[in-house]
Amino acid sequence: MELQNGTSVTDQTPVIEIRDLHKAYGQLEVLKGVDITAPAGHVVSLIGSSGSGKSTLLRCANLLEDSQQGDVIFCGEPVAWKGEGANRRPGDHAQMIRIRTNLSMVFQQFNLWAHMTILQNVMEAPVTVLKREKAEVEAAARKYLDKVGIGDKCDVYPAQLSGGQQQRAAIARALCMEPKALLFDEPTSALDPELEQEVVKVIKDLAAEGRTMIIVTHDMRMAHDVSDHVVFLHQGKIEEQGPPGELFGNPKTERLRGFLSATVS
Ligand SMILES: Nc1ncnc2c1ncn2[C@@H]1O[C@H](COP(=O)(O)OP(=O)(O)OP(=O)(O)O)[C@@H](O)[C@H]1O
Ligand SMILES: [Mg+2]
Image (cartoon, rainbow, N blue to C red; front, side, top):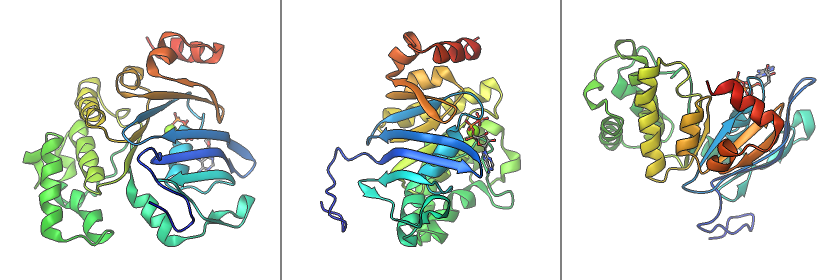
């Protein structure tokens, strides 16, 4: 298949590719030339200390944040920028919406609408943003809520659910957009350990069925178990990366060794 800009797209074309990305907040350089590739069906985990730029990188990937240099490429389609440096913005609104709606994000704090039932939460964006037919979306929403194990919670409000159930509802909401990839930012960090495992199980199931995912996490066991590739960010640069067995089993840099020994108790 050929895109309008002449790029050809094959099955091997990564869902997300980030090349040499630079991002600063004013004088603060947060990303200093980062490359990440998420091939279809792969799980990439981002690990690193607080402030290393993990959330910023995810937000740049789905264009929630502007960046000043480098490329963001979605399914072979490079983001069309207008302006340069501090003035650089996505230049094609339709493309920006297409990318955002195809990269569903799951946040640490769930971000469910308190005044809507769980079913309404899951149906909201497909109906209002994607303009899909309501009955069809409802069937899909019920299917995804079943899939994450809370099919019996359709008609209750978020406050009536445990944290783990709310996060699973947020995952169902992300899935109901039928995205090309899921982006998770610390999906288990706000949860008590026993609730955390419910969410880890759902993420493992999604990995097993071949979903493309980028996961920012402090849970090294999950990163080890679900990832095809792990990236260790340090102060806005990739310090080390590789398959999980290698990265966790045989860390090469002093910084990663230090990070892992401080993290794994
Ligand atoms: N909106 C913002 N305005 C200014 N600085 C910001 C903003 N968001 C993040 N930063 C700064 O950018 C740096 C990277 O932040 P980021 O949230 O990406 O880190 P992180 O790796 O996700 O950390 P954590 O593990 O604590 O979530 C930090 O120094 C942070 O203070
Ligand atoms: Mg973060």
